[in-house]
Image 1: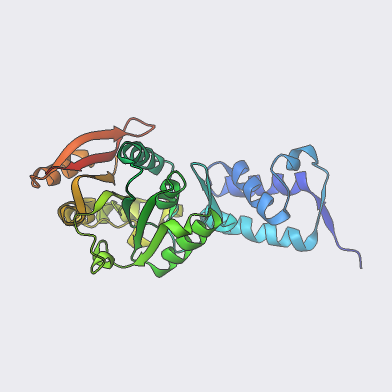
Image 2: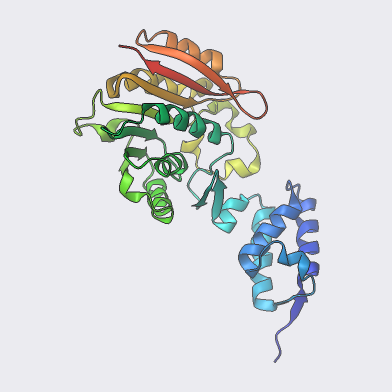
Amino acid sequence: MEKKKKKIKEILNWAVSYLKERGVDSPRINAELIAEKIIGRSRISLYLEPDFLVEDEVLAKFEKEIKRRGRRVPVEYIVGEKHFMDLKLIVSPGVYIPRPETEILVEEALRILKKLKSPASILRVVDLGTGTGNIAISIAKKFQAIKIYTIDLSFKAIKVAKMNARLNRVEKKIDFLVGDLFSPLQGKKLEGKIDLIVSNPPYVDRKKLKELPPEVKKEPDFALNGGPGGLSFYKRIIPESLIWLKNGGWLLLEIGYDQDKKVTQLLQSEKRLSLCRIVKDFNGNPRAIIVQKTS
């Protein structure tokens, strides 16, 4: 029996309509991304060859994934990847999906590390709560003489970060450590030797978790829940960073859009940490805090 086939334009029109009815933002882009992954044709070819016929078996897979997206499973989990700066990263359920706002944090880290770069020494960086490894890998690609200690509480996140480091050919520059914040560094004799600590910690106020969009709720709670006021991790990272940073070393933290004053107050209680600047995101909201350890 001959297999049934449908034109790609018909399939896309159905998918866009289906997603739109379920309140999914950017339904056409979502449909195109899923089609590209399942049907195996580039997004531009979907329109250059609208009469291309898709076999029933492939169509069934496509419809299944479109229905998952309609249930608000993040499109990144469905296609299994996410672009971040100039990186292509593997993403899987149970691991936090990188956001464009974090690119600001990475750009600040790169700017500082370029100034610290010296032919006679290796830069040492700690990435707390690495997730997919997007921050560490972005930094590792830009520097030859660098060692990054990438830490996450989740074994799954570290597994994905390792895959992404191999994919981007920087795995030899990174140590992948499982544990709670700085705890995996114990015994490595790195106290007072770190040039830069960078972190995009969980910073959603736990009372506001129920208000998050349906897609965000599909991501791991531990990567979002920042405790009371969203400040729990800052209260730990800020004082503990003094143990690991060298004099003149840097602490870079991503923050929520309304957390700059609260995090600044936490910094003021640490006399050896000096607030250098607060960097705003694309929408003009405070997004990254840049801090230096004084001697």
